[in-house]
Length: 288
Image 1 (tube, rainbow, N blue to C red):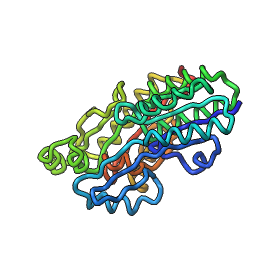
Image 2 (image 1 turned 90 degrees about the horizontal axis):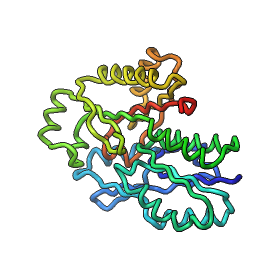
Image 3 (image 1 turned 120 degrees about the vertical axis):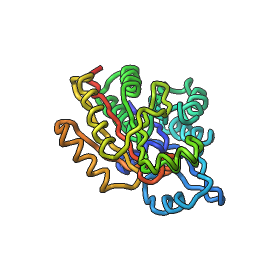
Image 4 (image 1 turned 30 degrees about the vertical axis):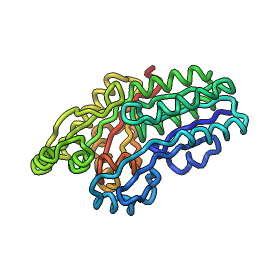
């Protein structure tokens, strides 16, 4: 069976997935106040971070336009696919999923369409894309694959922290006074995607060491909850040596858990700033 998968650019898929003929990506964008627009990407980010550091006000971000979905669906229907799966950034932080649902429902009379709200972004989207690909390749019924993907989206946990609070302040998510005090006190807000897929404060920590320690504790909690195993995925905003060190620290506590690292791209880094980082704790499907 020939299955197409649509996702948005905030999945930051590695090049080997982007190159596949049945993977279609609709792009989010970053808009700077000087009129320069950048397509959401996790590749060649040096120019973006330099411009982001100097940008005041903070650039805005936008979801893919409706026409992007129509263009993709026209290609898919012309290529004779048997079904379409869509995996999108959390509806709690973007209208991407809602727009996809509105546009793609017009094609439901031509082929089955299964849309998944990832309840997150970045690595969780990649995991969902990979899961759908692998299960379809095994010949598993599309509805079962869809239900499994929904389960993974619901059960995955994503925790985020930032290098400093400046971009949260610029973006209106934190007062400038609170950001100044927080930076002086070296407060590290640990944020989480909640059940609605919105980013909310989880805890306030004081150092990077405390953040890593807490991430290890959260991984241990997930292992107790999911005895068939979990995966750990780390994502970062242009801090490769730091994130490698974090991986080693977590791996020393949990040597049997596979850990993957991915870069964060322009849209997410606009809000988290340079050095933003996150951990996704994802149960293996055998736990279902």
